[in-house]
Length: 121
Image (cartoon, rainbow, N blue to C red; front, side, top):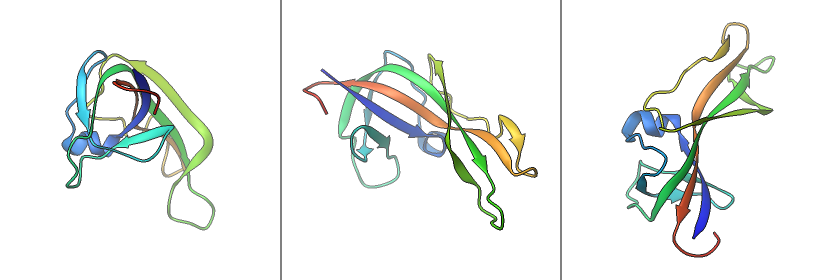
């Protein structure tokens, strides 16, 4: 068995995802390369990875509005993980701070530890 780290983005779950729990078997189409894969629900790809969910952590990131811009960017090193037993269908848009003040924290998805058959990925 191999363990994969998989990011399931909030927008993917909120749009077309089905919540899952620790211990569930899932079948997902993954993109990206090790050490972190991403779930892709919007495309012609069929589920290419089947595995069992070993852990789920909600990912929260800090965002800031750089001077002279109108686009928020992630703040390097500002990421927090919170263990949960079940993936939420909906994520909090603003955990702390405010867009008006140029800084906020937001839940951006879940980090999943997925056990899959085979050797190391």
